[in-house]
Amino acid sequence: MTTSESFFDLSSRVAVITGGARGIGLAISERFARAGASVAIVDRDEEACAAAVATLQAMGAKAISVSIDVTVEAQVEEMTQRVVAELGGYDILVCSAGIVGRNAFAWETSAEEWREVLDINLTGVWLCNKHALSVMRPADYGRIVNIASIAGKEGNPKLGPYSASKAGVIGMTKSLGKEVADTGIRISSIAPAVIHTPMLDQVNQETIDYMVSKIPVGRTGLPEEVAALVHYLASEEASFTTGACFDISGGRATY
Ligand SMILES: NC(=O)c1ccc[n+]([C@@H]2O[C@H](COP(=O)([O-])OP(=O)(O)OC[C@H]3O[C@@H](n4cnc5c(N)ncnc54)[C@H](O)[C@@H]3O)[C@@H](O)[C@H]2O)c1
Image (tube, rainbow, N blue to C red; front, side, top):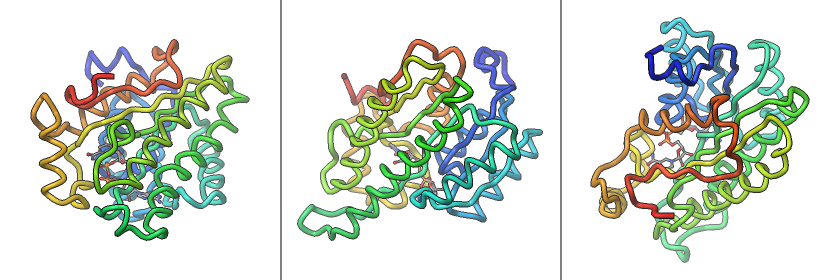
């Protein structure tokens, strides 16, 4: 743990990170492990999940891998129970699992493509939040951070289902934040602009150039920069904020 990270000590905390096997989720998992948390990596990519857990264990962290599809409620429920049984609690949830979907105009997009993106990016986040709250409410403590996107605020052309799903995450987080505001649970969303991760392999260069051109800082963000913001929001210190959407867009969002 570095001196600066010790301000947001997570040493008695159990954290679940969906989509934790790669990209932003992996950077968050590594940062949480350095801050002392026990970490459950939850991802449908079983191999990448196991590799991420091995990395955390090599750092000296307690970590388990739970390979599930976040769109299947029975699997989310089972994952929640496993985390409590194997790690002794459930204090923090970060929902990073997501897909971009095909780059296409609305009139080229099928209903199946629309539903797949909404199912993973919005329903999957709702299911994980719902079941985490079933443990956090009786404990009267919890921190949830849902990874939305600047696309949910502004809408990126040819990414309609993605933009709609992320707007949904921002709205759902506002609603859930208010539902538990009188407890020790705090729920936030964050809206990153384009971040350098394997997810960009799903996006064509023209779209990446368009997204970077809108960022005043003039570059893509780093997963580690996102992890730093999430670390604060997942800490006990983030006690007087809930339901809000935090910006991490290199100046793209001005609201
Ligand atoms: N990279 C960016 O530019 C960017 C910008 C804004 C927001 N985001 C959001 O941040 C989050 C993480 O993005 P990333 O760039 O790290 O992506 P990534 O593709 O590198 O990682 C996403 C992970 O989610 C997992 N996943 C996908 N569907 C799943 C499912 N149904 N069940 C369980 N796991 C599943 C994948 O296996 C993968 O490991 C996503 O929600 C994304 O929309 C990313």
